[in-house]
Amino acid sequence: MIKAMVFLRRRPGMSVEAFRRYWLDQHPKVVLQLPGIRRYVQDHPTLSAYEGGREPPYDGVAEVWFDGWEALRASGRGAAWQAVAADEANFMDPASRRLLVVEEHAIVP
Image (cartoon, rainbow, N blue to C red; front, top):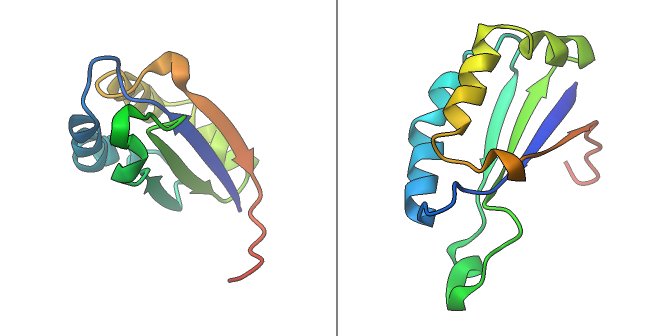
């Protein structure tokens, strides 16, 4: 099993609240259409990360699990992936998007 981790920032001019609401309520509808997806988790910084005018380096991290490299590649070839990419423009800054594909090693399960 491999995991794709996507680091992202919200669209310029979008509030943290609007970003979180869209990402939690709307975006999963398209992500869950990806073929071969096994698990999907969103990681949101605590609201205290924004206190005092501070900004965390990212507004969130998406974690998406697949059975292996071929399943990940296959998910990126079809119309479902195009729908995910199109929807990202509604809430995130595409230029900020960073991808890291990892093999997870749980030290404390």
